[in-house]
Image 1 (cartoon, one colour):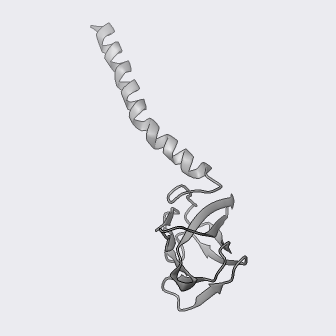
Image 2 (cartoon, helix red, strand yellow; image 1 turned 90 degrees about the horizontal axis):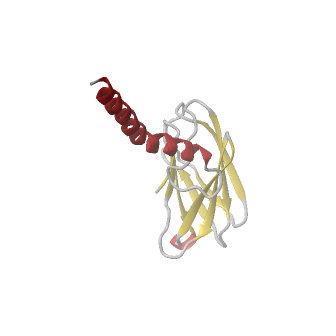
Image 3 (cartoon, one colour; image 1 turned 180 degrees about the horizontal axis):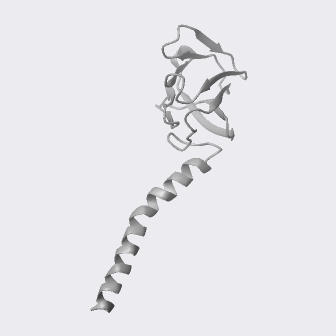
Length: 143
């Protein structure tokens, strides 16, 4: 009887390990992405200071607007712009953007260091990204 119980106990531990493995590996993968990341692959710690850099690699103007702020910023071609915030301390950071003449734009995320989010705007074919959102829990999402 003890042999049977021990066998089932190890089978349960193995099953639990296999069930938890995707969660643990997913968390590590999200923190490891630093270049050409997709939505949800970058996460910052709540409370940490964050510099968000915007780089326009399109041939036209990119209009940037922080949701709930009044100011609109026009980012010229091949130029950079940056803002400072604190993750989870300031309200959710939502930035909407659109290309000149409503052209499609692709937002590519990078994390060059632990306190910087770099968003590069690239020309796109048909589909267009429209917003980057830094949630209060530190997740970076593109819509």
